[in-house]
Structure formats: C-alpha cells, structure tokens
Image (cartoon, rainbow, N blue to C red; front, side):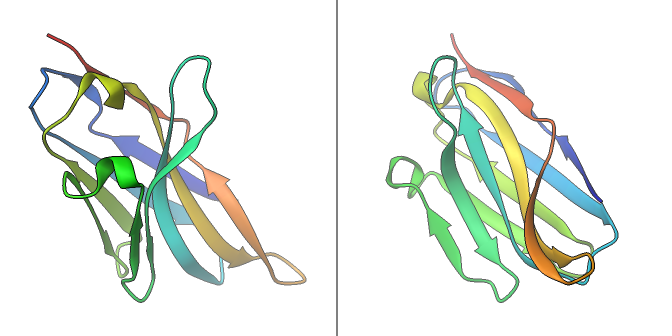
Length: 121
C-alpha cells in the first residue's frame, strides 16, 4: 500500500558521516510520522529516530547529538543525517512510516526493505 524507497547506505570510516533518505509513495489518507530503525545481526530491531508530521522528534539515547532526523511533508520524505559514526552503528537501517489508510481507516506501520550501513576502518 505504501512503497518506501531508501538510499544513502554504504561503508564509512569511524568518525565519518552518511545521510540516509527515504521517500514514501502510494495510497494513504495521511502520514502520522516517519522514522528510522536499525537491526544488527543477532539483535532486535531498535528505534533510531522518529519525526511526526508536526515536527516533533525523538531519538535513541545512543544517537543523540550525532544523528539528526528531518522530513519534508510536502514530498513525503525523511532524511537521517548521521555524524560521528561508530562501529556499533553498523546495522541494516529501515525506513518506517506510520500512515492512516484503508477502509475503514486505520493506522498502519509500513517498512522499507532496508539499507546497509557499515562503519569500519
């Protein structure tokens, strides 16, 4: 129902930066929030950062001060600027969108396919 296209992942040295981007398209009544989650091998998927349509942000403690999430509501896109990257940031990063859609209208979480971020020297 909602298609998410992610870009910007790759290999970066410790202390470096990457910028992840995600664009949402499809059928939905409205977007409630967008965000990024990550999952390392053998670990559960964890929240990285979220942003509501009103601009309210929330960050995991481990990324506060290093990552910045931003969104363009008109374009239905969300970005994650990642600075001062550490090896422990290595994971598959998934774009998430919480949308109101369907009939009857309900709130749903939709996910991108993920993009690999590797922080290594």
